[in-house]
Image (cartoon, rainbow, N blue to C red):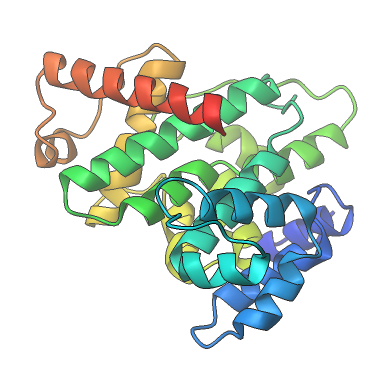
Amino acid sequence: MPSTPAEIVAAFLAKGSLPLSRSVSRVQSMLRSADYDAVDLAEHLRMDATLAAKVMAVANSAFFSRQPCENIDDAVNRLGTAQLTRIFSQVLAGAAFMSPLKAYGLTADAIWRRSVITAVGSEMAARRSDGDGSTSYMVGLLHQIGMLAVNQLWLQKSGATPFARGDFIREYAPAEINLCGFDQAALGAELLRQLSFPDTICQLIRRQYHTALDPSARVLYLGRVARCVICDQESPAADPEVMQSFKLTANSQMEAFCAEVREEARGRMQNG
């Protein structure tokens, strides 16, 4: 069995377990370069119908569109790197969470809902702290993508017992480490690295179970707290210093925040 995160993820991707075209990885690699050629990028986008359709839809949405984009070249120029990376993240997450995660006892709908709620919670937390809402949304959306690689290894073990979720701090990490030596955070970060995501995003996902010290980590932490409250219907013993930094120390404040996250996430899922 592969023994490092890089080997585990490489084996996972080699099995075609992530239903993405080869062009998608090339698109993300190009977006990572500050001097990519827009014409070349558009050509690669044309090779993946799902990604191209999403790019065109966003470019022609009311937020961006003064006049309709007639082709993918115009859409690339209109949206820019930040929006294209966000679209890529949404397409990746949508493709990744199409199947149930039996190791975790989660249906496809459940894992998608958990991802969107964490993404929206992280985005709203970023707004409260003058952070980057777009990046925070992407990190929240993809923060549990390492579960896919863990789930594949679990399926290879016949008769394996589904994982039991632990406390909020570590979640399923003890069971994941017992299975393959690494938690889903480490594998998720490596998966995104091999898909050419920026190192800043990979590191945030890698450290999601560490003490949340810097502002970006605290944003994801609050997204996870919102997910725990809304999806698991639990009130975790959240770090008081982190909650104070977002002015969410009172129960009523947190309830109001989660209600806002729940409503916004519902709209995103209906429109996504």
